[in-house]
Amino acid sequence: MSVRRPASRAARAAAVAALLSVAVAGCGDRGGLENAGTTPTAVSPARLWPDLRPASSPAYPYAVATRETVKGITVPGDDIRKVDPVDVVRAEIAAHPDDYGSKGAYHATVDRVRECEPGGVRARCPLLRAYHRDLTGDGRDEMTLGFRLYPTNQTAVRVYTVEKHRLVQVLADNDAIIGVELAGRALIERSPAGIAGYEYRTTWTWDPDRRAMVFSRDEFLRTGRAPDGRLPSPSASASAAPGPASPGASASAAPGPASPGASASGS
Image (cartoon, rainbow, N blue to C red; front, side):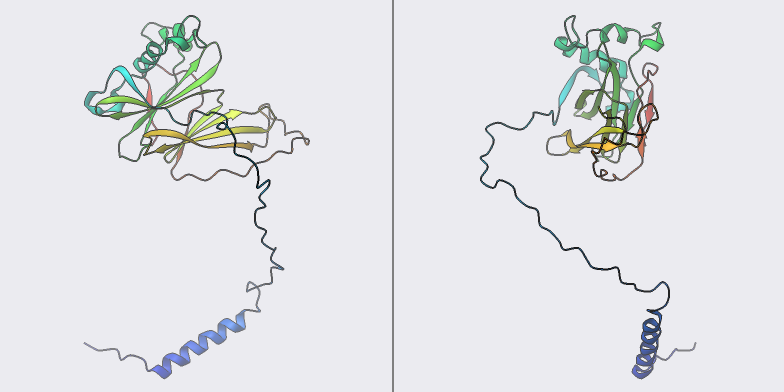
């Protein structure tokens, strides 16, 4: 067995010097370092009205978090995939008579939900496909559910988890929605804006302290084209920076009827 002798200090120093000379010689070559010009001077934020008195009331009240145990729903084996989405919607209607009663904002939804039952008119069922994905980080799937609301034509977005053998609603939002995405641990809602070529984008993320999906970001973004394919008017000058990229693949849930109890994995 032969043994390689280590190089002497002088030999190693000579090799390093040779490499440095090659690197210096190459700096002026094409593809080397180039002058990028002067660097803009950093400007610190300017604080306006430092003597402004604090507001006497909170900002516009936004439903930043929702938690509610769903009554009357069992979770076989704590497996949320075995929960029937139609039963979950029925349980919500029963728990909120002021919203779904004869004088409620969503009273016509009740008749539509009956169409989700066997023998009903499938095209009139307001329930959308259910998606299952781990949104809390505990290694178990949550259920993201959507259904159309009548007569407002809004879309209800709900997220449910299982805690102590009970089904718990951890997100509830109703809005005019054109798309929903799951990105990592976040749920992103896209809504139409009043200006052609723009849309609102609302992000909800899991908060382990509140044990709920909380409102974390609201953006007004340019989409490039109006819903009819036209480019936005030159007079529309509002813009917003793109939102943060969330880890993981995203799944889009476009509003549309699904067969009762249908579900799909969001993973």
